[in-house]
Image 1 (spheres, protein in one colour):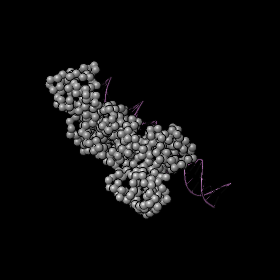
Image 2 (spheres, helix red, strand yellow):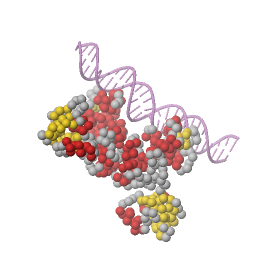
Image 3 (cartoon, chains in turn blue, brown, cyan, red):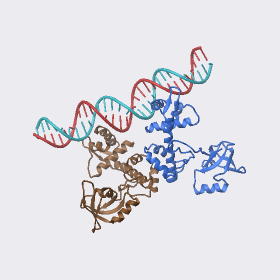
Image 4 (cartoon, chains in turn brown, purple, orange, blue):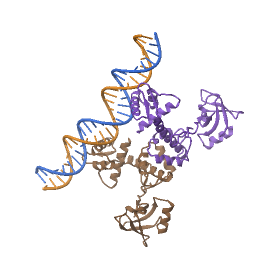
Length: 218
Length: 218
DNA sequence: ATTATTTATTAGTCAAGGCTAATTTTTTAT
DNA sequence: ATAAAAAATTAGCCTTGACTAATAAATAAT
């Protein structure tokens, strides 16, 4: 698998995640920032390698093998993101580009060792679950609070920014890991959000705060 | 700079290190495991970019700018090697291939952070000095004991294998960091070596031991 | 000094991955 | 049901970095 193939497969995998049965050439082109003509070519190749089922003019469907490969790449990407944030003190929103390069390093041993070194993390800094070496994802995905809709409920399970200042702020306003929350209102204009904490306390916060709070939805 | 260009430049840099004024096309081809025809092509390109001075049929000479670039790649390579050994518990002789890939990740910030995280190491696990961010190499190179010639002298400055077992062995035989040594004899057949420690104690060791002892030559 | 040999370069090809332009197929709208 | 629009594919070209075969230049040997 070349780097380009890995990237296409990952894109196709992500595009199929949202329950979509088949992914169109244009979808892939948009995601990959390439032209549809280039995509057609690559789909033919990935089809021949049986990473996808490719029926001309009808989009693609990822195969089990393709999914396995894509999940390996996703695993590597997310492990590197954890490394960058936990060990090298990158901010959670600074890591994507670099991880996009690091994920293509070919060394199963490296990933195994990295995983152990990071203490087998289950989530990346954005709250997305990290597949295990077999491509299995056990953990339920977390979502940033700002991405939730009105009336949705869940539980605060983690924060992205663990700076002292941020934790202090959370403590002050009465938000804590484990708190059950419900979205009461969202302001379209600035992305600020109002939530109900533990069915008793109303809490209004800016988008800047909300993006850093991870929710396990229920 | 592409990955290929970086690799060629690094090869040319290494080949010019041994005081050679100019490096031949064949030299580069051998080092890069490519054919001379491919090298000619790349030399023309690197010449146009003024990374090297290229006179057809007369080999190349690296420019200051080329040296600067090559040293950046060397720096990245060696920092990653330290990471792999110090943090991920790779053995010093297992890291080269992976570092060869990692060195091409493009992110100055990453390298800066990695350097800090590793505590600004001055040497890689093979004893080679790590250039600073400006390409300056202050430290004198170290050499593995097995690479020294008869009658050469120096001082033990580090070990590559820092396992308890190895350190215990060194202690037992009376070798220690700081000891002054002189090579008395080398056995061609198995690479074993006999040294004089602190001008008084003869010590015979296998190649397996010698490769793990780093000497600052004098 | 001329030939032989070695070394290096050019010419032409290939695969990967991108592109544009032209064409074909599918979908949508009348 | 057919025409128009949208989507996808093919054809043909480009660049990078390899290769082989053919040629040219430099060096070595007689």
